[in-house]
Image (cartoon, rainbow, N blue to C red; front, side, top):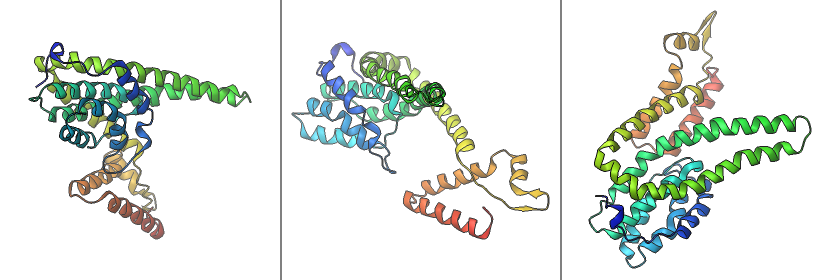
Length: 271
């Protein structure tokens, strides 16, 4: 259940949101293979949780457990999700019947599409433009080259983080109520899932490489396989890793297996 925004006792101030913005700068400075950026997320949102649940240690504990679950969103626009999450936590602090599972459900549902948007713009577009302009000056021996790159990339970066922090909170208290009532949320998550699969498929084709060098005379195995289905080997390799993860193999075991397989394959001449 999501309460109407007019019924919510406002506990979160603009100063509180600014504190999360400042902490979010270090959001992706702590990484682990099991839950990705969960520590940075929990640390960033900690001041709000302490304020909302200062009189209820049990709720504080449960909130920390929620925010130490798997978390990974591009840092450039992570604040919009922080803002939405803060609004939902505020609703939970004001309503004992609030469904706390919806907090993580919305977080997980929005991580993928928001990351796709953020990475496409900041990594795929803005960084390329900034680097191109900066490098052109640097190649001419102009010391303004790296400075120009840092300014062009970081000013929009931090400006968007600051703006989206407050916009996310606003969306969390007003927009999500209307979205839930209209039933469009399920369609958004379904579309986001399709988009996420498309992005993952593109990443597999471009970032996963299986450098097989098996050949006989003019027959090259990789070329034959790519002629049947382009990038078939990266797809099969990714599918194998996914299967192992579903079977609860440890990440470290999988990584060690990849290293051993790669070294052995290079030693016998198939890679």
